[in-house]
Amino acid sequence: MAEDTVPVFDTLVVIGPGLIGSSVLRRARAQGNLARRLIAVDQNPDVCARVAELGIADEVTTDAAAAAAQADCVMLCVPVGAMGPVAAQVVPAMKPGAVLTDVGSTKVSVIEAISPSLRADVPYVPTHPMAGTEFSGPDAGLADLFENRWCLITPLDCTTTDALEKIRTLWERCGARLREMTPAHHDRVCAIVSHLPHLLAFTICGTADDLASETRSEVLDFAASGFRDFTRIAASDPIMWRDIFLSNREALLEMLGRFMEDAQAMARAIRWEDSDYIVDRIERGRKIRKSLIENKQA
Ligand SMILES: NC(=O)c1ccc[n+]([C@@H]2O[C@H](COP(=O)([O-])OP(=O)(O)OC[C@H]3O[C@@H](n4cnc5c(N)ncnc54)[C@H](O)[C@@H]3O)[C@@H](O)[C@H]2O)c1
Ligand SMILES: O=C(O)C(=O)C[C@]1(C(=O)O)C=C[C@@H](O)C=C1
Image (tube, rainbow, N blue to C red; front, side, top):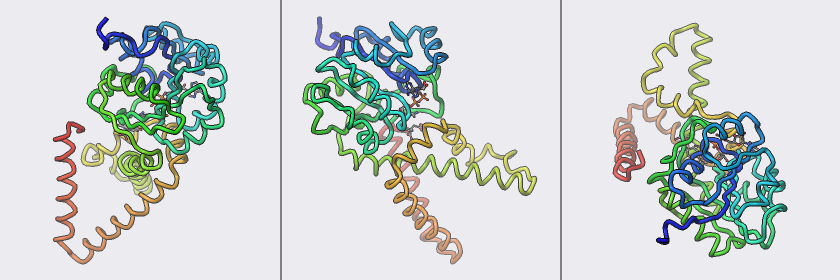
């Protein structure tokens, strides 16, 4: 068999087959070289029933420990606030040498929550695929969700070279581009590129909604304008984003503070008719958009 047709793992267990977990399962099904056997675990029996209907796993169960006992890799795809409790359920059941990994959007607090459950014979590889949509659940998954998108990996002392290599190969076979960094650096980067934009989107939608009800005006009737792009990410899952905000609190509050200073500076420029400042800021925004398009990330 050619090297890249040999599955990375024999049995892959995905816990939380929602948007991200079911995308991994779909890719694994489509390609056959991520794992030979796929098991999906969810605490919600309706999700299990839907995953079974979709046919994207060989086995579907609500019993996380029983599934983990069969795994060569357990991938945690639950909201970041559930990572610690789920790890405590599954790690004791895992076979020696099986790999534990997660896809959580924050890293420092997820690693802290999982750490008390870790075992010397179960290597752990924290990851974060930087791809998604505003939708959640098993129907939202896409086999090509990770194509050409970054997957950030934050290896730890307990991450063996072999486990790291396997997880890197798994994400490469999902089509992702890989970058390694420390968990703290990851959280600062994601606070500005992902968490703050979501905070702003939720907030601006709330402000517009308050204004519409206070003034009984037609504010939201004309929302298919610049506002529309904020509403897409504001449609994201409340549990997922509550958990992300609370678990990346320090970095997010720091970026929000910097943003508020910059917004204040813009307000000042508008008040004093400082056209150069205003134009400079708009040009910087345009440049960022252009470079994202050039990097095929927009
Ligand atoms: N949505 C995104 O854009 C995105 C991108 C990258 C990473 N992530 C991260 O991936 C993870 C999953 O996000 P998602 O968007 O796929 O969520 P999702 O809501 O689509 O799926 C999560 C699934 O986990 C299940 N679940 C919750 N608690 C559980 C538990 N204790 N035991 C078993 N199952 C449980 C839920 O029933 C649900 O089916 C989160 O940690 C999130 O931060 C999300
Ligand atoms: O594209 C979107 O809708 C997303 O929200 C995806 C997005 C992001 O902010 O880019 C959201 C959270 C993740 O942890 C990674 C990706």
